[in-house]
Length: 164
Image (cartoon, rainbow, N blue to C red; front, side, top):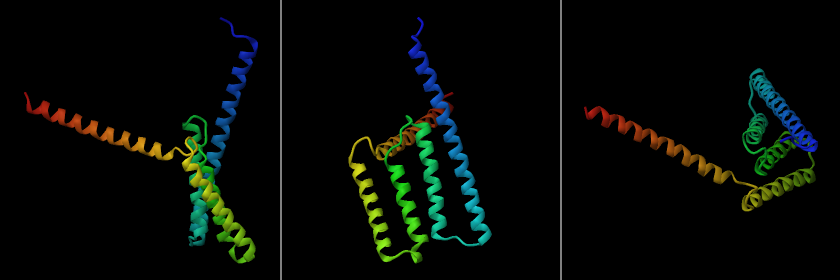
């Protein structure tokens, strides 16, 4: 059966959006990889590694994690990843600019970190917003299952060798 014109246009539009999303994810991944290399080179050139450098690398890792989560998942982002990125970014800002900030600004920045952390804790309580605990448990079970099946296969091979 032929699809109606609206359905065909909708399919083409959806395909176009998926291509644009994939392109954007590739650009984000490449840009993040370049930034990681640049930061590593900067640390190597200055021969110093500070907390700000490490937090920036952590931000890059979280960005890559978010890209992986989005591209391999159901094209959804859980609330946890952007919240963690934001908390680390604000903390990095606070650490880098500590000597240039007024005490009022430091207090307000610290309060913003506290609010973001509370939002992260609340998101853990709301089903569907923060499912990484269930995913970790499932991943652990899958790994354990793989190990057990490997042990069972080895045991069967040993039994076959013993019985001519």
